[in-house]
Amino acid sequence: MGNSYGKIFRITTFGESHGPAIGVVIDGCPAGLSIDETFIQSELTRRKPGQSRITTQRKEDDTLKVLSGVFDGVSTGMPIALTIDNQDQRSKDYSHIAETFRPSHADYTYEKKYGIRDYRGGGRSSARETAARVAAGAVAKLLLRDSGIAIHAYVSQVGEIKAPHYTTLDLARTEHNIIRCPDTTTAEKMIALIEQVRLERDTVGGIVTCVIRNTPVGLGEPVFEKLHAELGKAMLSINAVKGFEYGSGFEGIKMRGSQHNDAFYNEGGTIRTKTNHSGGIQGGISNGEDIYFNVAFKPVATIMQDQESVDREGNAVTVSGKGRHDPCVVPRAVPIVEAMAALVMADFLLQSKSARVK
Image 1 (cartoon, helix red, strand yellow):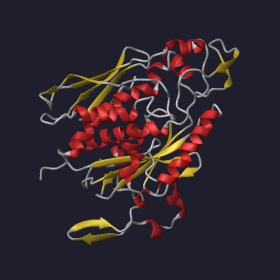
Image 2: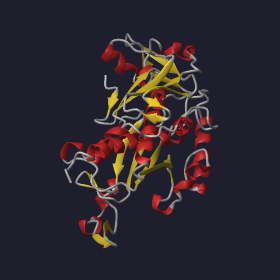
Image 3: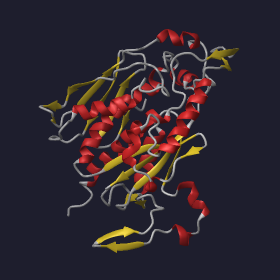
Image 4: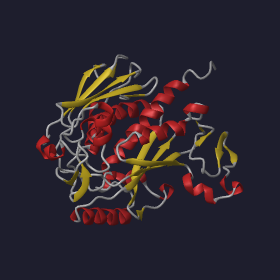
């Protein structure tokens, strides 16, 4: 099972939704990095359940425990082990699907692949696992911070409701509302839609946009490990993600090459581009401009309605939604997207140190 990600800055996550704890081991974090546990905890708080009326009401403190790799608040160069206890499991909420397969969940594929599955909240396939990624991503953010690289994600769309382009927004306002959209007018409409969907016992999808600023030129590898390819892989590994596009994305097909090309110019000795349809990446390598991309999340698969399905024997059954679930995943997905982006960028930053002698 693929539980690890990264080359130099490498993480391995472990644990299940209804097990005693989840956690992550980070290999390759350089010694001497100040490990701000308060910051890591604040990132976990942004992701944790029960934080607003439009998210799942499962109550988890998501309190961080540092088991190894840190001494006197500084990384030692040894593996950093972080754990988060599970506190509010209600495994009985899932007893009704022990023998049946929920539509659009991983129940069927996990059982067929492994011959066994933990039906309590989806086990390893649960989005609960992403808390471990957020913890590791926070450490990666601390490493990137020393190089001036900043990562900002926000909710840019819920259903048909879209926010303006990121270049017109103040991303510092992302945390000013429960939907995590920096445009107040759009945020109010998004919240109203999610509340309506919840009352209808249904779910809705959306898009998280991520912007990476102050990236040095040269991160990413040509051919098979292009920067945008690794970002895409990282984002598509997140639960419920159905699409990834960077730069002009699919909209770029509507343009002519003469419109789409990013012309270079010299700005006080720094080579820049007049436009940024490339999304800060050319030839799979960062060019110094903003890296920006969209991540599409499907509607949450668990809905509070009866659905047709089958059991282990192939018999037709009716599955009833129970438990505590998000009517829309994107508000809590913002820190997860940031975390995965940070892991990719930290890994490539360390790889870049060996790209040339001088």
